[in-house]
Length: 118
Image (tube, rainbow, N blue to C red; front, side):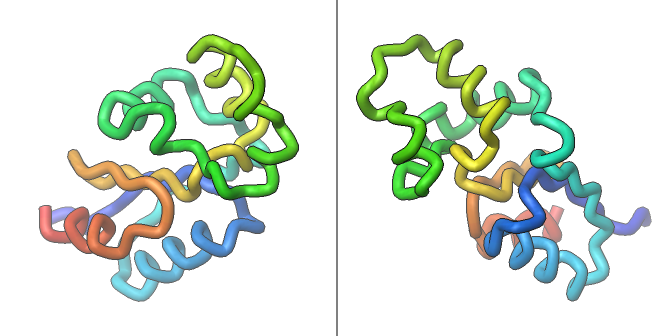
């Protein structure tokens, strides 16, 4: 049996991302971490999360970045929002985690635990 592993998209300075990293490390799960501050999320990867949760569920509507972006007031297409999210990952509810067929958004310990059951 192979050791469990997850792919995590987040920012080093995000408390929720650090919490997820700690959760998986404590359970000896290999984490492939993609720092969105260094490398933007691929459109296809973002699309995978959007299909499951919808774009609005991925946005951190309470976050300062969302407030500063004025996205709530801009008339823009979904494509426009996606472009903004790719250049400003702080707009997302981080971390985005994928383990097997399970995807999670934000701090979701139940979802993370489900990844380990697969």
